Amino acid sequence: KPIELKCTFRGQLWSRFRPMAVRAAVLALAILASEGLGAPALNDLQRARTKKPRDSYRGDTQESMSKVLNSHLKRSEKYTRPCANWTAEQLQDFLDTIAKHRSDELLKIYGSANDRRQLRRNDHREEWAELNRIVEDLPHLAEPQREAHCREAVMWWTHHLEEDKRQELRASQLTVPLLPDGPKKTCGRGVGGKEGKACLFINEKNSCDWCHSSQAAHDAGVPGTSVPDALKKTDGPDDGNPKGWDRKRRCDQDQMPRCQLCEGIGGRAWSDKNEDIDLTPCEIVSKADDMNQSLRATVAPPLYPKQFTVRRKDGKQGGYSDTLIGWKIDPFCFGFFPQNDSIKPLCYRSEDSTVKYYDIGREASRIEYTIHNSGVFGHLPNTSSIILQVQDRMWIQNNLWGVKQCICADPSGSHCENPPCHTYIHRWNTFETAQYLGREKIGVEWIQNHGTGTSSKVMELDHFILWSHHVWTDPVSKKLVRAWKPFNGLQVYDPEAWTESIEDPDKLFENPPPMCKKGGAPARIHCDDDGHYHKGKSEGLELLEAHLNSMMAKVSHASEEVMI
Image (tube, helix red, strand yellow):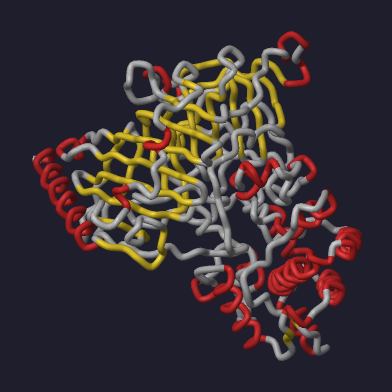
């Protein structure tokens, strides 16, 4: 039986050590995945309450998932037709047929859980009519529209009907659409507002692109690269809040009742459990509607400088600190980064950086961390990490107790539904349309030698919300000080640590980094010889596993000595 050891870092659970088993992440594209497709014996209500599909109903990519689910559909349904053989109007008629027979009890379950399978609106015929008018004027949208309808049709057929109603419709020889075979089609050519409105319907699930498209694409008005108005929606959170977090830890702009001051504030979190978070203290100073003109004039907009360095003037750690939260893709949470939902198990890692660099002109950022081990791990060397992103590629460079490792990464890879996908650093004006809630006295974690929770530094800050993002600005320094997204993480900036320039950016943003090229780090994951991302290439995994096992043995021995 493997020994389980816990290491505390700044008071939170850092990781659980088990025998190393480096494995590829499996992408669970669950929006259309059917838990009970072709299995009529499975209780409808049980399936409705189950958000995560079984492995046999999932795929590594959108394309492979569609093939898997189509194979189940073909086995369970006598009459099917490929998506390409339908017109949009025929698919709308199919959806209308399903709508007449859908189960109110199932929809009630989805609605109460904010499940993504819930019915988004009842006036679908009116919505489709408007969409059809736009596509008639812009025929290049016809194929993306048809494919979107096919995906919606399979989801409604599978999740909005009880099994006895499906049996009844099968007896009437109703033909069921299949999912599109290939990758999701690109929507839009940047030709105007009507196109953007249509593509919002088609591409709404690609929400990362709202903030992580290139700055140039956003500035050019490319559809899908700007954040839509969440206040026009009432059915959030978009992923159904599968972890069951309360409104202190998570409050989305599109949910009802609407988020208020001191909601969605978050804090230092260390697991998916709702209670495993050190919530920051918060006190309302003034709601936005109650502020007079002179006070309102002091509010700083939540914008980043286009180029900056954040580093304490004394050179110590803590100018920029964060809790990074993202999908768990390896057992030790060494290489992970945020994604656009909270469905999968999440990794949590809180760190102080020595420095953070950002340059939107280069579409580049670099954060340097040093992790000081404590407790029984104090016997081991410190670990360090550099996270570099340039354009749509990322390199995670780790020094793991003396052994160097590089992970070459494609930040869009875990949520890509429309290949090729490109995920860039956040834009400098990502939060320019954020809703202003008002002013709070709120704790800011870690800055200026403070801690978290009740030990944080209390400041008067202005609270903004944009979908599931919450950001706070300082009315004195006019800088962004705190940002929180419950499944992406916590970011805090010391307002005294900002410099709106970068020294030697060519060297800092060199890419691919030498450490990630052949002959650099002995352990390189998903890197080709030139240091570029290559999903199928890795080297040094056996060395890394042996090294980690050796470190585990040292920790185990040190733990036994402490116990004695």
